[in-house]
Image (cartoon, rainbow, N blue to C red; front, side, top):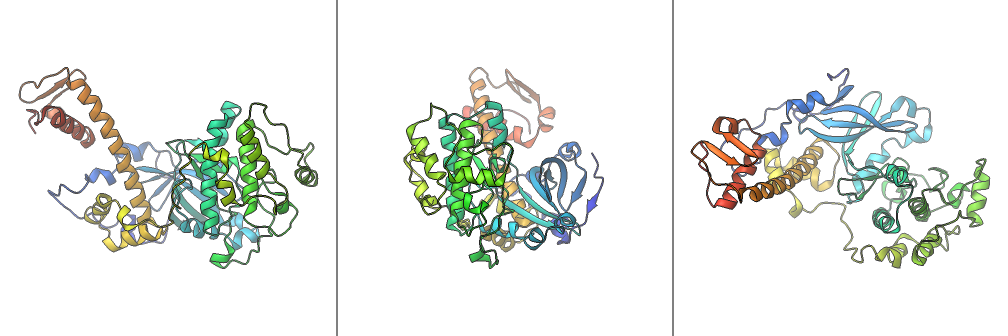
Length: 443
């Protein structure tokens, strides 16, 4: 679908594809140019209503009071992203939202963790504020629970442990999320938790914001009793919310409910520990942890570091490892991607390193992140493809000059040249690996 609207974003023209890529012929160390040149069909077939900078803005994935999350496509790499679009006009109606509009982006740039969604880019127009993030193809955990009615204890164990590790990482950085709920837990392609939506998060001591952690915010069903009662509170409000999420995973319902709804009645139920029934099949360790997490008195409720060592969580994975660093180390840089960006796409070496090493949300970081993920995905596909072809080569022999034959492939030299470079790569590598020499295919 052609773009119906285009929001001009103030940025360097080169970052929007204005500068022609540098040519590097005969450089075998550079990944193919098609890595950052998506097929025309990908761009043509991606449904979108407008384009903002390098991103096509597509279908709606979710919606809140002042923002919508939409599927996006990065035009330079052909990789999909999630784009949170905040309506600045609607936000102006709420002084708190207006005041803290850019705080979400600031906080996410402080954080880097495998169970927290990665912020890639920030764009702004007269009427909208855009946060470009990695897309989680596994969808929402809420849908998983809805389909299964509830999750079994072992699956819950995995997700709760990942959530606890993500929150521990936030608290270590001085960040309190304040809106931990099932709807804000997404799943990546490996079925791992990704925490999203830092719109209500705060880190007053680090960024200098004046919020003294007394603001009543978040979803009442997940909010700690001290938050609902407008008392001063701290990071332990997130610990309570983890307990509500754990209960929701194990039962498919919420631990405290009142009919008809009343905030006062809900708060009283929490204070009285009048929790809804638990399934009798739950282990004693699971029930014990739930009761610790849903302790109404914050002084008696464990902090996130005490939760980390709970015996029930250790059953899932006893090796938590060293704390995850918020900044990538230079040794972790993918030098193939770095070389591709500098040699093929015209980026400065220092520019790429600066964006990646400081986790600064900008188009440069987005390109690096998306190309890095694309390379990982293609490498995985190569390995699977090579193994499949190697398996079939056991039953084949090299054919006459100009042909490559096996039961599922039969290409002439001319047909071979029309294949994608990915499939050409697989055929050559598989042949070399198995036969110890190139096939008689005419190049």
